[in-house]
Structure formats: structure tokens, C-alpha cells
Amino acid sequence: MDLPLSLGDYGRLLQALLHNPFLGSGHDGPPHHFHKRMSSPEPDPWRSEAGPVAAAVAGFVSAAVAKATAAGLGDKGKEIKAAASASIAQLMDDYCGTPPKKWPWPWPGPPPWNWLIVSELTAAAQTFQDGALRSELQGIAGEVAKKSVAP
Image (cartoon, rainbow, N blue to C red; front, side, top):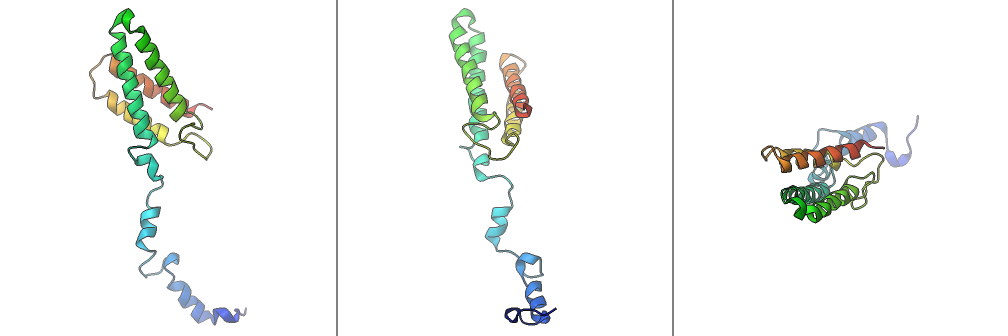
């Protein structure tokens, strides 16, 4: 088999391929910025403080605190409890739907940050003693998990 003149002979082609850093040669390898960009399978917005996980967890915890506080107020807290429940439902719709509206996920299936939200809510619940707030956070985490696997 003959090579085109632009590639030269087999020896030159072989040497060029062996010294190509993207083909796994013994050279330095891809540039440093290439490793940095490819090292994480997650887009940076997921991990940032303004990303979906931090925003959702903060919203769920705030609503759970309001709902637990309202439960201790009896009849006076009915409006607060209803507003907190509405906030939780809205947060579920915004962050945990398939696909979520506020943070769209372009691939099939649920976005992977739903499981991070469940994990963070469960960890937050474990920081409280048994009671209304801990139960509320665990319940929200369970609902997020259910919504994550729902068709």
C-alpha cells in the first residue's frame, strides 16, 4: 500500500504517530488546560454556590423550618404552613422534575443533581434532634428521591 506524498514514508508516519501527545506517546501528553477541563464529568454550575444543589437545598431547608415552626403555632400557623408547603411544591417542580424547569437537563432521565439534593437534605436532617424539623427534612428528601425515579 502506498502512502500519499504528503505523509512521506511509513517510517516518518510512524514516528509522527508515536510522538503525538494525544495518542498516548511517552511525551508530555495533552496540555495542562486539557486535563483541567476534562477532569470533571460535571459542569461547573452544579458545584457552584449558585448552582442547583445549593439553591435547592437552601430553599428546602428554609421551607422546612417555616413549616416546622408553623406546626408549633397551632391554628395561628395554618397560613405559614400552607405557604411553606407551596414553596416546597414549587421547589420540587423547579429543581426535581424531569426535566427540571429552572435548570434544564438536555439528556434523557433525571438530572444527577437530584441525588445530591437528597444527600444534602439527609445530611442536614441528621444534624437535628428527633422532632418536627428532622422529620420534615427527611420527608422532603424522600419526596425528591421519589420524583427523581418517577417516569
